[in-house]
Amino acid sequence: MKKHLIGVLGVAASLLLAGCGNDQASGEDAKEVRVGFGVGTYEQQFKEGILPILEEKGYTVDTTTFSQNMQLNPAMQEDSIDASIFQSTAYMEGMNDELNMNMTGIAFVPSAPQGLYSEHHKSLDEVEDGTTVGVPNDPVNQERAVRILEELGWVTVSSDADVTDFNLNGVETADYDIDIKVLDPAQILVSLQDIDFGVVNGNYIANAPDRKITDALKIEDTPEQHRIVVTIDEENEDAEWAKDLKEAYESEEFKEYIESNEQYDGFILTEEWN
Image 1 (cartoon, rainbow, N blue to C red):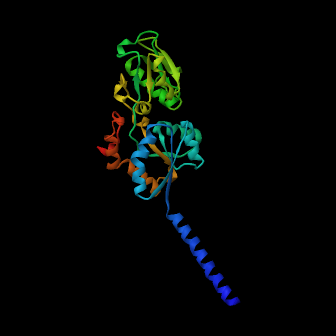
Image 2: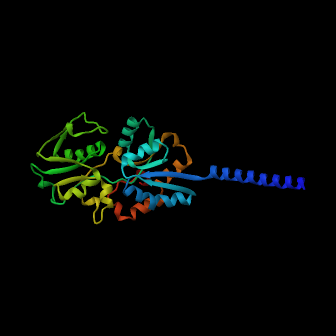
Image 3: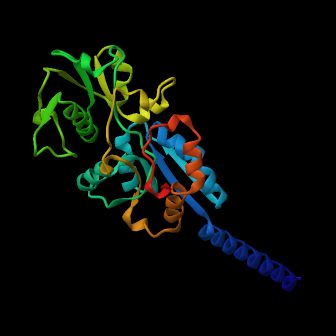
């Protein structure tokens, strides 16, 4: 009887260990990736155009939306997310220096250019002394916005102005004595009722009903450093999930999704699709 009991316990223990071994193997084989976003267009692009591609490859994808963009890079630094899709190369490089990180961009994302919009004026010729112009309050987007005003001849910018720590100290009015209002990027669109012109990040326009990027009175010629990139920690660059994520963003399937959606008219597309 004792021998029979010992035999049964031995078989049970063996099955338990085998089960644990199978669980471990399936964990090692599991394909998981955690992706973080700010609120807006790039999350929608991912969920509608990229997520199906990754799921078809067997990935389980955990997405987190942060209410403030400044929360994403610390989240990656704390290993709460594997990838983020919200920032430009210029912003990423500035945060690498500030946070002592080693982030890198692995693929360009269809990116919305900034534009100069108005609720009160139909032409740029209506600018005059005292005209109010809203620009974003974060350095990288503020620099982009001011470059649009510089191109129009509304301001001049100091030759030693930097991108990542840009401020208005190096900006002077030129042809017109305009009044520059510094606002939260997300608030400029809704503030157009109260100002003459505003430089709005294109992702806010793309998410707004009855608005198009092409409605802008002036659209920036977006430099490569200001295009949105899929960002990961450099140490993960050779990981299979990173390669699959890059491949998804450069795929014909994602291209078809973007080009079939009027919301993305006017977006800057990746050269991989040319």
